[in-house]
Image 1 (spheres, helix red, strand yellow):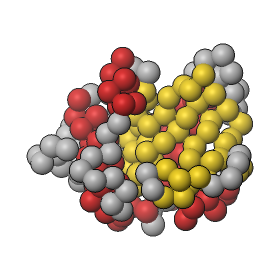
Image 2 (tube, helix red, strand yellow):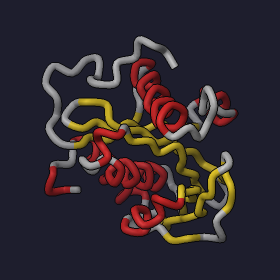
Image 3 (cartoon, rainbow, N blue to C red):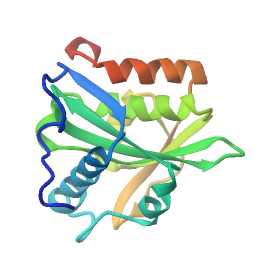
Image 4 (cartoon, rainbow, N blue to C red):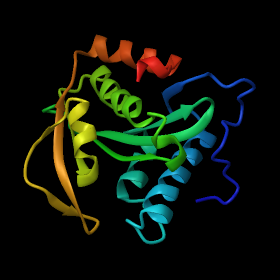
Length: 189
């Protein structure tokens, strides 16, 4: 993680959009924010990984096969998630590395980020999305419509619950992506 990454404001924001905005990373600065948020949550705060949470998927994803989403809250970088297609034949996608900075967890950033990941995969023709969820977050995902899809298993030394969600049609997913990029106010959480 670069030490000079500012986790408080997007680099070009004159006036922040009120509420929560979820969008795909579009620049190197966005990408740096994505990795900085993950590092802060998974390495420094939770200690899930020692040193770095980067993996082979991050390296392989340089070709665009990995989609990185950012969540902003009142203009401040607040969270991130990545997703990628697991199997083009079955149209199954994987969502992972959902990370929301501590000050924004009570602001409701996680829900829109998860909905944006689901909508993004749907907009690209996905049929289902899978994820491995830390046990403390299973109830949160259930409230968003996810269901358990197997027994808990160990990932990075911690128990995770496999979960999945059926994806909406592509046009519905694309509409949701556009709406989330425009922002979610407090009433829309």
